[in-house]
Image (cartoon, rainbow, N blue to C red; front, side):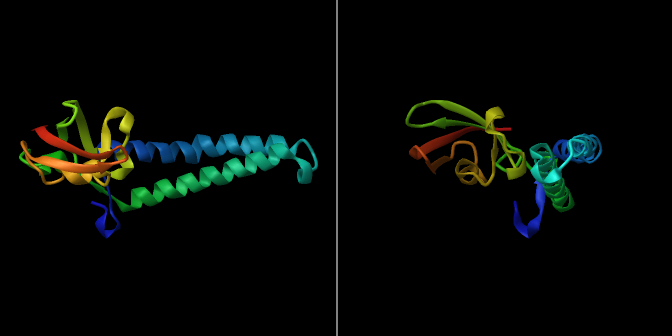
Length: 158
């Protein structure tokens, strides 16, 4: 769902990003300005490592702000109520079984910007995410992952 240059986000994620940008622009910039001012007070800037570090931190933070603002400008809200539960789509919660190991997995399919494997949110552009899109309960999919070719069966779609 990255076509047309859009970034698909849930309403919750959009609010999180907006809050992060606001925080970086206000408190974040204030903290950096204080660090730069303090480093300047130490004298000669040509040999002032604290000043160089603070300026580099400022540049990285401004880069992050621009990146987040670009994401927000391209954002389109997705709503799970737009989809039926009969096949896998973005925002589906899917329970699958590895047919070789009989191990069960449950994933929530999200946009690449929201993916977080630690909490089982996988991107629709990941190998597993791509293979599941459009499939129905009972379908079997083969996925090439770093560990090799894996076969999964879709057990449940929410």
